[in-house]
Length: 314
Ligand SMILES: [Ca+2]
Image 1 (tube, rainbow, N blue to C red):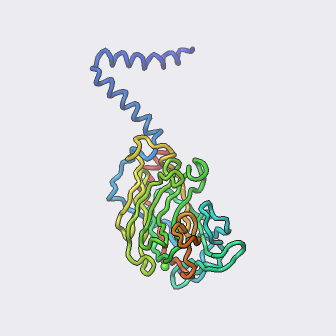
Image 2 (image 1 turned 180 degrees about the vertical axis):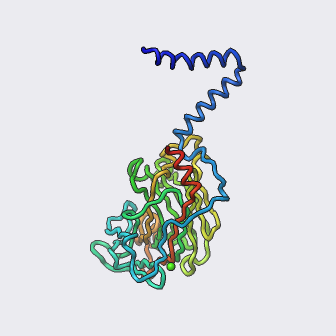
Image 3 (image 1 turned 45 degrees about the horizontal axis):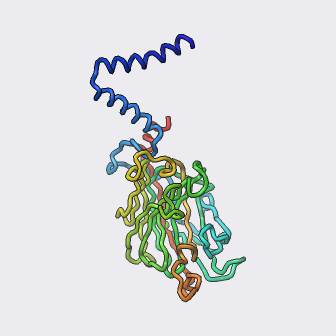
């Protein structure tokens, strides 16, 4: 052992000895706790961020107002196919046939028609190729479909799957609705520890009037230690992982990574098709076509939150 190493070892031991000699036990406990808290802050997620929650200012950093007459493919790409998407969904997602941009709105139209191996068509678009976000306020002004079997969603998945495959890297469902339970809006997060496979997902619901005939604003405010869910600026759910566990790991808070946006209408499936009548597939075939219209999506970020995150990561 060289001298420097020896000195480095001796100093803390001496320090402890001096503390023991000169201070009360209370002081030693305090010292230990502070050290542990510092270590914990490095390891625990969604913890020890200090900011004035109600006084944050936000700047618009990304949006689509859906002006013009076609989908802006520099922002969005189509997710196509008809393989059930892990939920036994019944639709085939086409590449543009079920989507239009008209009168300042994005329109996703789901239809009852045979297409490849499926008997319903719909559309799903994502910003996966072009843009992802971390910590943001997201507003989506939307009017959603009606009828048993429809399952529209405005949601987010992780860009880099840093903590492993679904659900370990997380999912944020800004808005979901199933047509057999009209006007009940759901906001949910899924993580490795909290997900619907285990029945442990974390979320809330709110009853909203006329979701299929009126535009409502569906929002989240995603902060470094919580995600809040709103409809028309009314908060109906807040996921704060430290409420359930003092030192959350990625299994409880994978939301310190970038996520991208997804818009779609699914048909049937494990949730959308859960209300079966006379042994049918859970879809009322008389309702089609049905649409989800989106007037705008606006994403805002707060400089204060971005700075806090920069400090944490450096
Ligand atoms: Ca618009």
